[in-house]
Image 1 (cartoon, rainbow, N blue to C red):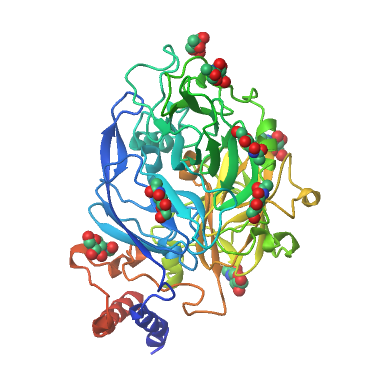
Image 2 (cartoon, helix red, strand yellow):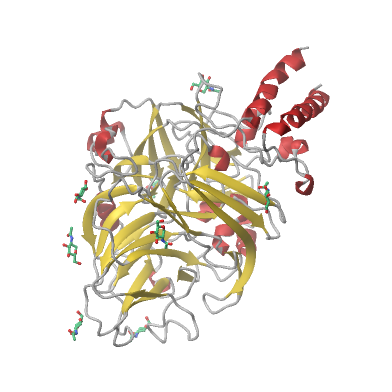
Length: 597
Ligand SMILES: *[C@@H]1O[C@H](CO)[C@@H](O)[C@H](O)[C@H]1NC(C)=O
Ligand SMILES: *[C@@H]1O[C@H](CO)[C@@H](O)[C@H](O)[C@H]1NC(C)=O
Ligand SMILES: *[C@@H]1O[C@H](CO)[C@@H](O)[C@H](O)[C@H]1NC(C)=O
Ligand SMILES: *[C@@H]1O[C@H](CO)[C@@H](O)[C@H](O)[C@H]1NC(C)=O
Ligand SMILES: *[C@@H]1O[C@H](CO)[C@@H](O)[C@H](O)[C@H]1NC(C)=O
Ligand SMILES: *[C@@H]1O[C@H](CO)[C@@H](O)[C@H](O)[C@H]1NC(C)=O
Ligand SMILES: *[C@@H]1O[C@H](CO)[C@@H](O)[C@H](O)[C@H]1NC(C)=O
Ligand SMILES: *[C@@H]1O[C@H](CO)[C@@H](O)[C@H](O)[C@H]1NC(C)=O
């Protein structure tokens, strides 16, 4: 009897699944069908297996408009499980579609799975990438750009760029395959310096014969003189901060990860791993030659900088000849982060511009809201825990459970995770654990990232944009709050934390779900430098704050018996299937009773 009572919510829950998905009617749908495969490519002149989508590396762009419904049917033709995540897409009420191991079972080889999400109230430049952290797939590609355009009724805060949109995916790159890189990390050996920097999957232009070998295909950006282009630049690499610049041209910064910024010209911009920026670039130079477009490694050993310099070519349609001579200079402080931290602080929110909605971005006065929870999250260099190389946050190295957190939460699977993540660094031995943050629904959380490691790290939070309010050297203290920008700190989803320094962000936890907070530097992420924030509305168990479990959910771990073979998969579509669902629920009840008694 007691068991039957306990199963009642489950029954209700399955009946809810039969109801049509709420509130998406009226907004257009965009459909994508993606085959994910290996492809042999030689970006640095050495043939290697990369991850392609529909035969393309990088993958095709996802170009949609605010509030559109996006449907992506992903066919996994790799020899390993696969997940894709949508860096910066907020998935309101819908962490089911976030595509990280805490929210989704991976798509097994030869299966397909359809992501369905709405880009609700969003606008800007983002990217997607393969996200099963334990597989290091992003080091092999599989990424592509996401553009969320403004609706026609909401003007962008600058003249529409008459040249159009260009996406540039830049990132460091290893000539070794991702499985090889995994073996290194598993064996306790850090990855060491990458082998190059790619532009849209291509190696460097041969700007210097003694640095770049012959025969490498490079990226050429064709433009019309006099026109203005919106360049959407994303650092999709493994671990290296890159300085981006275009010879002879200004970069007018207009947007970062979904926020319109106060427009300012920069001659170069440091872009850290996982970050996205839009620049307006006007083709206002003469066409006597092509121009170099450069992405060079920051804060690395000087002897590796030549190798770690990506070079593409900007070609005016009336160009008289190739670019030649030295590359435009990088900031001359390869080991000093002062220039970079000052540049980061200069990026401000345009509080009067409209974002995805008609009201000004700044009408959300984040500086006036009372903080309810404070988390001081400290990282250290990777260290040995039980003989294994691991990375930690507050002394805890995250272990991915075989049952996704969100499924364990919904189905009450005991013992999968603990809601006891410490809100400050603990003076104790580091450990591995599945401990997550218990977020307060509609709470206002202050997170301070304190970087005690020796490299720049960037942190990304899924499901939200946070306000960047402070960044400084040394140890954060309560007094540091006096320096916070309470007015025009930019709202974004990925922020850098310099070594020996801290960065503070504020986030309004109004999006219920289970959300990944990770370091974007892939090697440290692989080694456990991540946590999840669970945000539950205690007053609402209906689908007002969280959408129902998708009907195509994949089950794994402790719930794997709920999974059917894909080829025999039950289709839950239309009202006529309610009867079948009820009988299916009957089957589950028997199964659950059998397994729990
Ligand atoms: C993206 O979509 C917008 C609006 O639908 C369109 O104007 C633009 O040309 C598209 N861009 C690309 C690169 O396809
Ligand atoms: C797999 O793809 C087929 C069409 O190719 C589609 O009908 C089916 O719903 C997809 N399966 C899932 C679980 O998304
Ligand atoms: C090419 O690179 C080498 C090594 O950095 C440098 O010594 C040389 O001056 C460069 N040549 C030119 C023409 O810039
Ligand atoms: C940025 O530089 C361009 C020239 O490349 C200039 O026309 C424009 O006025 C500058 N904009 C700002 C906001 O400084
Ligand atoms: C074109 O611009 C370059 C760099 O600004 C300059 O050195 C060159 O003299 C210019 N050429 C002409 C024909 O104006
Ligand atoms: C801010 O946005 C407004 C549009 O509301 C625009 O007119 C203005 O130029 C922008 N200011 C800056 C500094 O970017
Ligand atoms: C998590 O937080 C909620 C309030 O948001 C509280 O009711 C609950 O007891 C907390 N759970 C744990 C395990 O701390
Ligand atoms: C790490 O913390 C220790 C102890 O507080 C301090 O001595 C050291 O300078 C810090 N290193 C960095 C890079 O922050």
